[in-house]
Image (cartoon, rainbow, N blue to C red; front, side, top):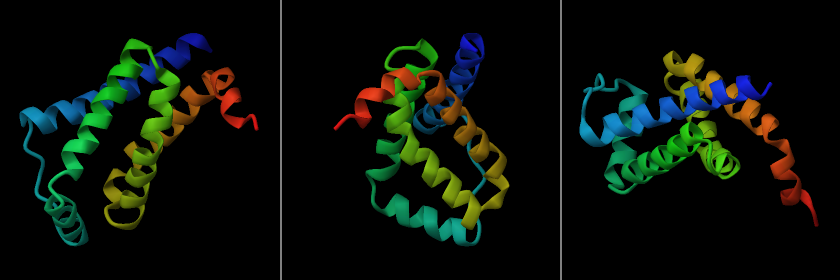
Length: 124
């Protein structure tokens, strides 16, 4: 179980690191969004701060997952991002649903593997 958690945690971390690094350094030019996704992306880009903030959170959480430090905190911080990824792909762009479901399962698996660390969050 411990080795599986490390593997899943590392894969999820690498995915977030890859996404954030390619955003900041423009290694890969993504295809332009079309339809409703174009309108949604344009709205987020118009806010100016959103995508850089999102990518910083993804980068920090990806580093935490890959290094194995602050995994519980990273899992909590990345959860709202994963929820938004799932909702965007469920309602606007269904092509990305497999990756979104992987992220949900991976984060759930990592959280379950570190379930002892979450007990103090649920104490009154």
